[in-house]
Length: 379
Image (tube, rainbow, N blue to C red; front, top):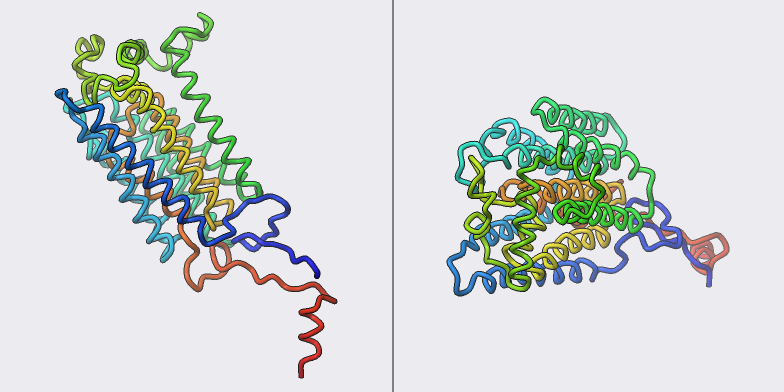
């Protein structure tokens, strides 16, 4: 019996690699894993808060924002993927511009919190990623160029807001999106993005523990500021004292000497991994990494084109990098936007849509196969 060529959701031959979702159960597996991980994060935050004067509301709100954004992205991505992604890009851009001095959904109480700049940069990165995802799903035509110009303009806006890190991250997302258009092996690309995120987290640990060469340490401290490094070192000491349960959600500001002595401090270590380590222990760090891994897994199993998947993966990795050295995840619009983008990029193909993101191309039998012979003999 003749073999047929297997094709991915974008109509391209898959080759020998497993680059796209092949069975209807893929969404069920990733959804079940995500539900379990998010539930575990919520339960552990309550366990680490039990019996102490803590504030787990911020963690629970962030988890709710991610879940709601992901569900909304799944629904809208099935109905209007390009329009939703483009609209999300514009909304994120407007939020970054309108609230660059006061982000909505902030958990900090200071008037001028150090995390505002990082949150604006994170929103701009999400805007660039959403615009690139919309361009990748739009197919060939003028809209693809317009949407990529929007992503480029978003990167330029980061410079206007004096955010060099945001500019580098947004530009990196755009470059990755252009490269993803020629990539077929999504698993290899997502694995590389996971390694990049791991290296950045490892670098923050190395800076806090002062295990790097002196010259490199001084250079990084100049970019990160000495105050931020001191906050990380306070978090490291708290994590060593409470390795399993941590000190409890929302207690870092009470136990960190640097946070108490810093003028205008928001009471956070400005690093999501270090905050998890200090407040929820090793288990909290593992769950944070599992949540990021689940998002990448959901993208790998997505029926969407590889270009959309890798663009979304690059955006989430850039966001993870900003969250590793900043306070971006303390803002509800950022966490909701991350969930929305992941939901859009992992949604089912639009019903009745053609082209990229539409129904998979029909597999035609080769000449001489039994199916061709039967068709030729029919009157």
